[in-house]
Amino acid sequence: MNLYHIQNLEHYFQVYRHSVDQPEQFWEQIAKKNFVWQKPWNTVLNWNSDTAEVRWFEGAQLNITENCIDRHLETRGDKTAILFEPNNPKDPAEHITYKELHTRVCKFANVLKDKGIKKGDRICIYLPMIPELAIAVLACARIGAIHSVVFAGFSATALSTRINDAKCSMVITSDGSFRGSKTIDLKGIVDEALEETPTIENVLVVKRIHSDIMIKEGRDHWVQPLVDAASAHCPIELMDAEDPLFILYTSGSTGKPKGMVHTTAGYMVYSAYTFKNVFQYEEEDIYWCTADIGWITGHSYIVYGPLANGATTVMYEGVPSYPDWGRFWEIVQKHKITQFYTAPTAIRALAKENLEFVEIYNLTSLKVLGTVGEPINEEAWHWYNDNIGKKRSPIVDTWWQTETGGIMISPIPFATPTIPTFATLPLPGIQPALMDEHGKEIEGNQVDGRLCVKFPWPSMARTIWGNHQRYIDTYFSAFAKKYFTGDGAFRDATGYYRITGRVDDVIIVSGHNLGTAPIEDAINEHPAVAESAIVGFPHDIKGNALYGYVILKETGETRNHDNLRKEINQVITEKIGPIAKLDKIQFTIGLPKTRSGKIMRRILRKIAHGESDQLGDISTLLNPEVVEAVIQEAL
Ligand code: WTA
Figure (cartoon, rainbow, N blue to C red):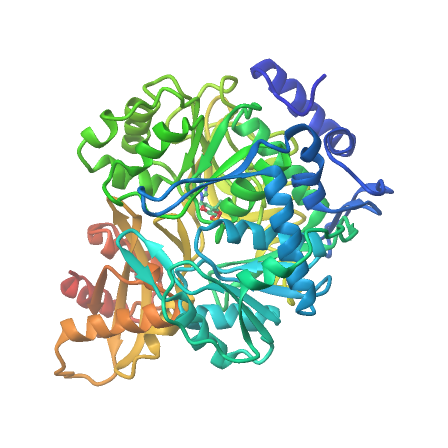
């Protein structure tokens, strides 16, 4: 039986059964047949559910860039590996072949080495969606440096927090970035961040927008002259299977962001395997994922998964609305895209625009459509299916997380029948479970529960950088011996899963995870603010938007509330980034609290949703009288 490429529904069921009955044998067969190893493993899986320690393919040695680049040179050296589509449609697209990618990665890796970077060092990458971003990521992997990519929309404070947490010694950035008709001063943000980061020794700067920037002698270096002078020969660093490959930060419901650590072998095997199956990738395909490499989707399904399969992967620098709302479809037509993977928030934004932006382009090359990042609502699903896929291209609604490293629940196109809003069935190797609030697994179908995973899979994050206890507390303590996702889910009569959303204090806004605590912390730094609480409320395009309840310090505050709202959003922009700005701010005299002093977000959520008539029992509150006041003030 071919385990690597699932062809139809019956085949899926067979493969799935095998993966559950004999998980180790299953992953061993896949790993052996489809990847290049410098040394084989001794054990397939080592799992200690008490300490939440998991090791896959222990004893093996490899380098992921050999699998993503070198092994393709002979058979696909002249094939395009990365197809770069720039922000400005008038600028030419760039086709980087596997041979060229090899040369550019090797040269970049040698630049890193010349600057003293060694295996295990952490490098922060803060770049726009330009080829150097993928190249820098791969250059780190080639020499065993651990990359920590920070999305280039994050603020200086968010950047310095991440640099300090991982104690990075280098930042790779650019003079700026193009975003539609705007440019962004990335280097200025880096300069500000570096005022707070004692560990940074060197900054490599890619020239992109040709702006005038500050170059700090001895610390900052233009990258191009260094690359030009570097050798194109760079042997791979031998990595142990469990050596960290990268750190990627994700928001938690409390406290500072969590640096999820992904390791080499398991991540490679799983991201490659799921890419092949979820997108039914074939050799001639031109695959495009619109995510940013600053998020996990870009790591697994722009860089590693596609390249491990020898695919052509598109990187788009710009935004969906520039120069107009037809840009995505213009790119699909121009490059004859076969698989298109995006977020529901983008679909909703595109669906609001005139259909002419779609209809003037030829989209017949499309075979598979995908979505990720948040639940897709039925209306958006149909718009996508009718107008983009023309009811011919299956939609894969892929559920997964930064922590899972790869897609966990998803239809397999042309095999799994799809139903709007259902992520459908677990991929091979994934054993989901729904749990009730007492910690018992809910058996059977037509049930709702908290979504857990019962058995390890190769690409699960291994720990939180520098804080394994937090990893255990966050993911392995709610339900004994199970990974808890933080999501709720419904299992229908046929066993299909529908993700119903977060059950913790993470809110997904435009597909970005935002923890309430860091935003509240930022707001509370405003001198006029005494206390605050954030909840989500439904938004047409973003899925959720943020609603803030803010208590001001002085009663009888006379300052203009609109100005205060602007100032509060300004603080959030500085501390976190514009993605965390609040859509609504209600100034309130109090917040409903439990007797133990916890804010009752459930009540605030109801009020923000305009459902204050459905609050349920509030008699157990410490201050039930506050609720009526909050309702009266509601916006
Ligand atoms: C949500 C993104 C419904 C979910 C890869 C999860 C989804 C969080 C889906 C992880 C989907 C992701 N349907 N919800 N298809 N995909 N989510 O870490 O709440 O940025 O826990 O990883 O996004 O977001 P993250």
